[in-house]
Amino acid sequence: MTPPGPGVTLGPIRSAQSHHNNYLIGAGSKNIMHLTKIIRPYLVVSLLLAAFAAGCVSAPVQEMSDARQALQAAADVGAQRDARDSYTYALELMREAEEALNRGEYTLARERALAAKAAALAARSEAVNQTSNP
Image 1 (cartoon, rainbow, N blue to C red):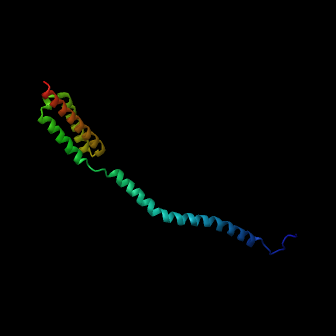
Image 2 (cartoon, rainbow, N blue to C red):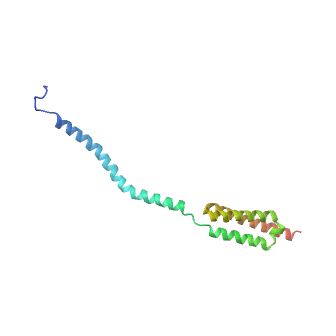
Image 3 (cartoon, rainbow, N blue to C red):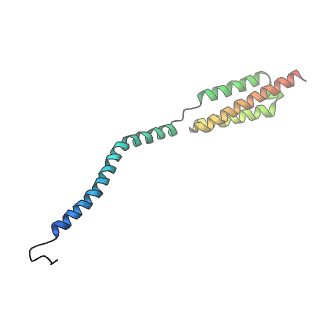
């Protein structure tokens, strides 16, 4: 095979081969771009929902109310006198719940309110047992 003469170039052959390679690479890129366009809205919605769920924990209104009622029930049977340590512990947990609520730390406030309720109910039981078994 003899080399091409003057004026004949291999440019179009190289261009065609280069164009073919670009087409193959471009096809993959186009598919990825198309896939990205399809997934992007779902990804954005998913991220927004995750941020909303993580950042929008509601205030533990019911838990705080339940804990206050349990403390009142304990006080009504004399827990501050007959179950002083348990009752004081319940009050301390309630104070921590209220402080966490005021700081906007709702998860902590909920945990402390539930613990205060449990401690208040225990103090109430202890006081009732003290009264019935002097």
